[in-house]
Amino acid sequence: MHKLSTLYERLINAGRQAFRSGRFGARKDETIGADVITLNCDRPMPSISPRGFVMLVAAFLAFKGAVIAHLGLDTYLAAIRVLDQGALPEQAAAFIMRADFASLAIAQQLLPLLN
Image 1 (spheres, rainbow, N blue to C red):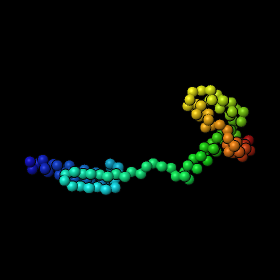
Image 2 (cartoon, rainbow, N blue to C red; image 1 turned 90 degrees about the vertical axis):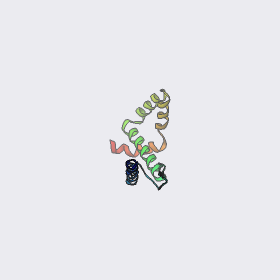
Image 3 (cartoon, rainbow, N blue to C red; image 1 turned 180 degrees about the vertical axis):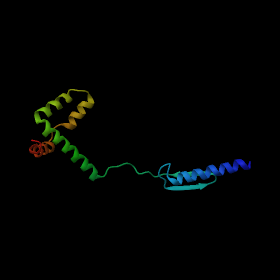
Image 4 (cartoon, rainbow, N blue to C red; image 1 turned 30 degrees about the horizontal axis):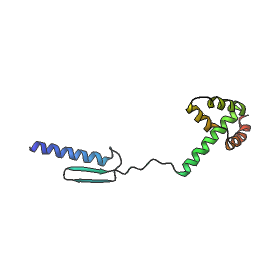
């Protein structure tokens, strides 16, 4: 029985060290008692800040403007029309990639740089 209790204590100590080292993720509180290890983890929810969202939208509009300036508006609209005739994911892409005022304005600004 003595060997089993020693082995058990060694396993408990190895588990404590592993959890304290952070190998098993973030932990907020560790309660050890009555031969039970209880971990209460508070992991932050993945989120995007408003500033990050605005930067993402601005980068997407700049990308659309660069593609419009590079291909030309007629070629770009023809490609969007082809996408619009496809399956549902292609139609969603066509809806997102439609030429809007902001991307057209960006294309106007980028056109002299590309020519």
